[in-house]
Image (cartoon, rainbow, N blue to C red):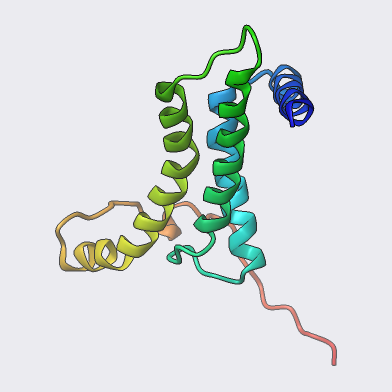
Length: 137
């Protein structure tokens, strides 16, 4: 079992060094990537919580291996880092779900005039004259 833990730690260190990102950056990026991938595989919308379940299970496996690393000399484990890694992995996908669920309410607020985005009309930017082209059958 310890050989699996050491191989996993070696892979994470290699990945972090290769892409020049910290472990915590990778937790955010991979958490979102896995969430979108599982959502696509399970054919669920962004409002569904089901794609978050496999991401949570993968994170649980990762943190279990991190916890088992404490039995190796000169490797430490602390609860603080574990909580941060779980929050960084599951937090952004949860924010995506909550934003997708609240999107209709935000759109209705915009329609009622609570806030409006002011953009110039499209015609102000189009200065090209168009002509009718006959289509061949």
